[in-house]
Image (cartoon, rainbow, N blue to C red; front, side, top):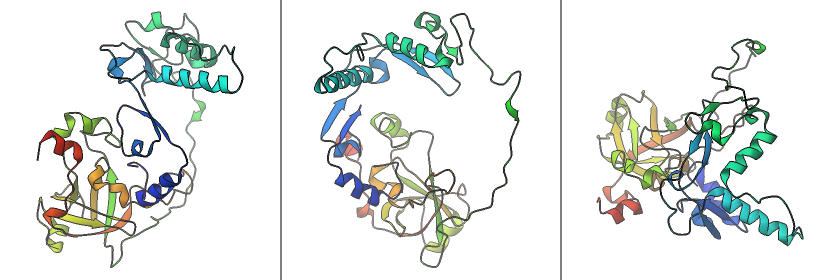
Length: 301
């Protein structure tokens, strides 16, 4: 309910679901629709491993006890799986009987060739980069150091496809969405941390020439409208945005950029067209700005 395009349509689908289970640290905008909420632990409350985009498998060590009824993800999944198996009559099943996350890694090592040589004792101090083909293999810091599996590259000609929605007289600007340094995805974690103090409010970046033409001042409340929805937020007049283009980050539930975006998919990649849709911007009243509940509770306004 934050990262999907055209949230009005997404909301209709969510409301039609018969049963929803959410497993998370916080009850976010999607979790608000849950019939059952399973509280999970944060990275600081559990043991385990993670693999980053450098293919490095590293240890996670529990630093503090879980808060409240929160449990590690693997325990929640195992508990749920065991109960389902009992309902199916498999009372003596040998599956989902882990006692520690190291056993999960051992199963990964047996089932995934790239992890065959990854063991807890081997990553106690320094992680290993996959593929690790056996327990004596040192890991693979560089891929394709000796050969490329399909030559040095393969090029395909493509035909240019214009955006599904282009500016016109009613919606003369292009909206593009994205991230800022301080926040991540739907803001489920970062907006519950003090990172929110560094970027606490939704802003729309607009070029100075566009702002002058529309009679918009820096810091002024504005309404951004597309064919799918409308949000109110403050204007940030900046040359970071080119003429004819406005930018809104998509972390802020009180001014969700994806209320505006179009749910058309790229014909090949099937990715929503988050980066281009037609909008208009006009001045709004200060009273129309929505304040996020978390910040009201914290007393920052």
